[in-house]
Image (cartoon, rainbow, N blue to C red; front, top):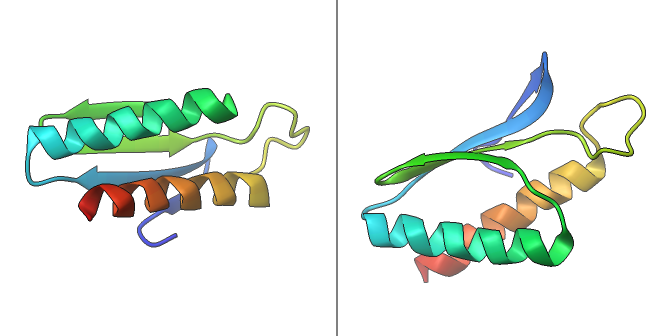
Length: 87
């Protein structure tokens, strides 16, 4: 989970992904969108021409509203999707 920052208020994981071109960014966002629909989990996303900011908040059924292993696993999967797009 290289590059992810865990914030305490509000509790979340954040990472900025940078790309060489708009097309690379769009490919990543398309892959991320497909994956999110498949697992029915949706991070907050903001993006520009060559970057995407991803924010993961605790899963909804987490009573303490703390980042959990499930959230870290979701972040790792997003990293994996990014690496696939690079190849």
